[in-house]
Each structure stands twice: as structure tokens, then as C-alpha cells.
Amino acid sequence: MLDMDHATNKNFTFVTGRRKYLLFTDITGYGEITPILSSLDEQNLLYMVYYFNEFSSNHDLKTYLSQQKMGTYIYASGNWNSIISFVKTAEKAGFTEEELQIKGIGERILRVFCSRCYAINVCKTSKEMVCQSCGQSLSVSNHYSRRYDAYLGYTILN
Ligand SMILES: [Zn+2]
Image 1 (tube, helix red, strand yellow):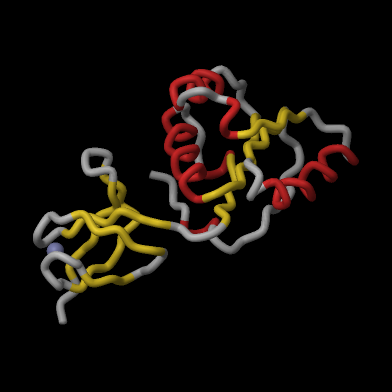
Image 2 (cartoon, helix red, strand yellow):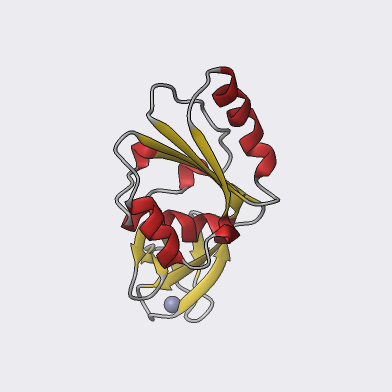
């Protein structure tokens, strides 16, 4: 799983020298995209803008992203659910952290797997939390389990 923590409160940085730019957004994220659009226009660079919902499924999105050539760079901004889903798909299509920037808007909700009692907790952005099922203090890791569709929460010794 790509590390998404760095993206939470960081503004987009304009990256030059790429073959093509793909911008993905929604109504909440569009304001974050506009400065990048201006820079791309000023420098006459090739780009495409999409709304997340233009792709009817993650499969369609993955197919589209897989067809992109080397040197394609992605900016994605929108609500957290769209961003998390988008990043998972982009990763499957072969994109790495060096090839995209993301910015989530609003509240980020995470699913966290308790490594003690195996319960799935739902929480907001946090480094530490208490399992609602067993009361264990957990450290929320960046380790994402596809099997549980959740981040692993490691037990903290009190
Ligand atoms: Zn627990």
C-alpha cells in the first residue's frame, strides 16, 4: 500500500519534465487541482482532467491507467474514500509513490484491524487508538491488509 499519510495536509508540488499529466478530481477536490492546471497551461504541457465518477468501475480505471506510457504523472484530489480507492487502483496499475501526488479532502476514515482480538475498528486519522472491542491500545500502521481491507493495528504495551 502506498503511504498516504504524507498527503493529508500537504499542498501539491508542481513537477516538471513528465511526458503527460493525468489529473483526477471531484467537486470537493477541484480547488486543489486548479493551481496545477494553471502551471500546466503556462508551460504548454500535455494533460487530461477526469472526474473520478467518469470511470464506471475500478476495473475500467485500472485498464485505463495500465495503458499509460512511462513518464505519466498523476495528481489526484478529492474526498478520502475516492482517494483511497483511487490509490489502490493506481498501485495495481503499476504506479509508484514517485509518479503521483494525492490530496484527500475532509475527514479521513480508516479501518483498523486489531492484532489482539482481530476486530475491525473504524477510526479517523490517528497514530494511536483504543480497540473498541477489547480495549487494547493500538498503533495504527501503514501496513494495509487486502484480506481484511484494513490497516493493521499493532498492540502497544502499556
Ligand atoms: Zn481488539
